[in-house]
Length: 256
Length: 261
Image 1 (cartoon, rainbow over the protein chains, first blue to last red):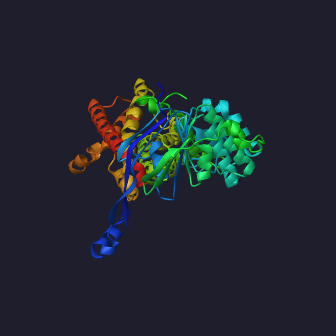
Image 2: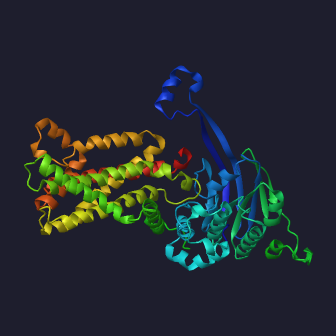
Image 3: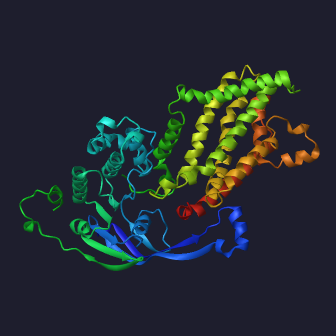
């Protein structure tokens, strides 16, 4: 029996919002006399009874407005936050791309940062050594790789971060609106790379504002609003025969 | 990539992360300095030279080879104080990492302590070189020193975990620790012998866990003798207590850590 890659069961996450949180003695003292300066606690329900299953190799799109709980959900699947209720079961290595280039240090060179970033994902340096050539090649930063990261443009940093993440061959990729890396040609390259990884069986969970993107990329979708599932379901794919033969769009070609 | 291991293997899998974090801190610290890593030799060397001047020309002590006695004490006390001060900010300083990716959280304060330790080993290298000139004696008991140091490091690590996780909730702790470490210096037999104290002061200083460790280090490195077994036993008890406190507290707080950062 093939186990699903990600199972989310009745997930609930409460945050305690602390308005006017008293961090210092002065505030605490003032709070004795001024009711308005007192700490107010509010239970905020970020996620309520969210369930879904993603099979191996499938892609799921998470849709919803700002503050609807998409990123919280991603953080829970990644193991960063602990759910209040319910559970998440994942099979395989999860690579959260909540931010590209986590842990990048501006003083270190691009080359050194590749190793630092990869080790955050649990990689050994000797395994990274085998891939480092591919990572640099993909990022198209050969010329700058031995200069400190502080001299990189933000687009260059994102390119490097993306390149590291996809070359670590994750089983499950959690992507938080990261598919806008660099200029158009590079974006296409990223999408093609993700498509290629998916062909090899990688599972994808994609957070997006853009229903079109989800349509193009995903097999099913979940739409969240105020932490609840508003709607969820499958996306019917255009059959391969139906795609027009003018395969000018490199993304589509790589994908279908 | 291997499937996530359980127990200790879960941490072991991330050993290169700790290595890279420590290497990063070292690189950043000596970035652009012409002498680079050599600077970490400067501090202990200056320490010894200044003490040598002050305590042979300004103050005089009855203890023979007093500089050796003092330097042993100060260096070991520095390891303690620097580790604790670094640890307070280790988790709060790494909030960007902790909120974006999962990895065993215990590695952050541990890497911060290892960074302090690496610099400290360079400092102790100076002591090793100058040891015979300061009046140190070579004896078989020195072979036990690594064990004693290991015990000391374990003791400090327990406190590092405790303070790193407490500082997330109580940000005042950092400042408190800074002052407490300044005071604790004088309640530790770093530069004096506990036998010279009056009964009252002595009973206070004896409750300081560092006193036992100082006794062990002074016995091994200064007197050229084996430490008293009672010191070793009490030091072991303090270490067990510190490790228990640190690991239990860290384990309990680590789960919800991210929400408080």
